[in-house]
Length: 149
Image (cartoon, rainbow, N blue to C red):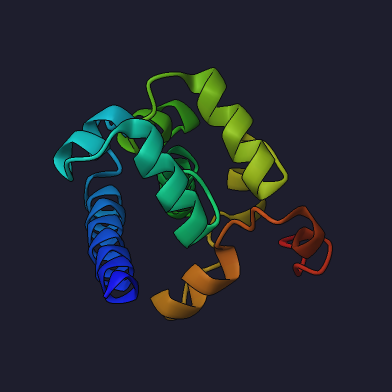
């Protein structure tokens, strides 16, 4: 009986984690924080962070920032917005934090990325462009990533 109860709780937790992840995916440009996300699913911030990291391999904040950087990469590729405009459009409130996180995930600062890739994804189907330009958090995997230049 205890095993079924534990399994049922695990499935409930996974359902709540999917709701949190889906909310981050939808509302990445809104001011979100872990406390608010946790409140939305009736958990403490610490418990949500532990469960989220166990399920997805990164904290809710890291996941949010990765989504923001992915969107920023797409906006920078278009080339019609400045780095500052992109920073605020994806929900970041600090250009310094945005640039630091962007550089950490992508490997180059946003201004360099914009110069390197502006127009390079033009003509590619969106699903291919997303795969090719998705930021890779794993530093070992970065060494095998094709160059954008």
